[in-house]
Image 1 (cartoon, one colour):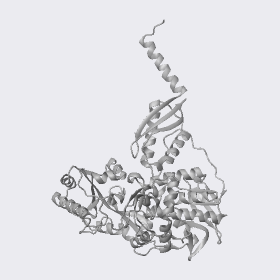
Image 2 (cartoon, helix red, strand yellow):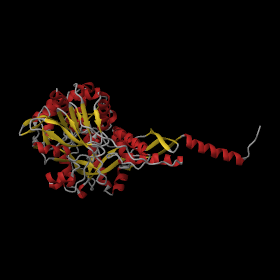
Image 3 (tube, one colour):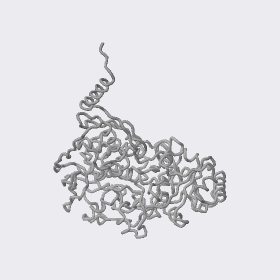
Image 4 (cartoon, one colour):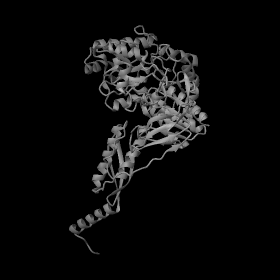
Length: 565
């Protein structure tokens, strides 16, 4: 047998490594995303990326399409210098960084390429849906299930819109979930709560339609794969009717994941990164829309019916201030795409608008980063405390009342406080903790010291509140829902203040989700979701958005399908 010295072994190893790089090898690396590390495997052969696989990630479900888009672009261009996905920036950066690390580890010399030029031709379908949030996806699925060919266009590279950020739940009355849990509710009480919350300026016909359809939409969504098995209560509700995923997890990502999968399985033609520029209307009926493709090319989608589901205008500061000047300088909880596109593109059709000056602020938003803390935290027992260590409002009053009360405090903000029991009762709180949003104290006095507020006063506040819970009566602020005492350490707090959250105004529709002009339906044009107005009146109750967008999304899709036949 022939033996090799160290020099020979080193030379052979070098040859083997070179051969491996030429013939192909998989390189694994990771980088921090939004919710944790993203781990990828990159297959590189002959200095060319052949495949990229995500091995591990903890990102929100709605970012999956965006991650696939980035991977596709990197493989096509052989470069990590591709655009981030709007609405998933941290995920995009983390994914690209992980891939870049794997490439550098390989030592490969990539040759960048230009993207292929795609030519888009005019197409024809039965129904076209503008917007891929909760309302748009529901409408598309409903129209497809009703036997129509459907194209859905979404200007972002991911589906979900504002629904991705919905956390609290979906309000519904007389549901199978309530029945199974022994909760007594009625459609009439749901209507009364909604009308009262909206200062009785709501369109009662729309509210009645929503409430009467709420139980069926819960069953429909669960059939599509959504988890709405848990119950809670949010501000303005007199009964436990806020349906949400097991353990109180955020409702939006769960619903969007189920609807996205259902839409794809049913054969809805989903076109992402496609911006709807205008609606085609010949004076008698709508005939389709003109869109801008991802490469900037314009083309026409001819259709017999159009559903507008583009969301509200909470991220369009100019439009917000134009309608409510006092909101100048306010932050927003809305995703960047909530810019009022549907309202803008429908104006040439002389559509009726309603309640455009009714813009809701959400009272529990972190001032430094505009992250919204779900109302379910208060629903599960948290309290609001000012810089003097005192409660100052019924935490479960309507959002406008709580927002106004916060702005009247020192610093125009407050502290949302709760104990370990509340933290364990809601999965959403875990994500706040992991992201470093919460201040923690082993005791109430310890928490007060960290926040710089009087510890003695804060301890008195907790004591008074706990006595109210035990007696079942809040003599200070008449809070009705008192689910738990706050006695189990550690104790937690997060600073919150109001920010623009929901635009109650928009396109006027009737109970059939038909868009109105001079109070008469425009043939073939339907709308659903936050782009519409009238349903919530002067103030939307937490949990009423998701039921609104899905109930009227389904109605819009079904009626658009029927009109197209």
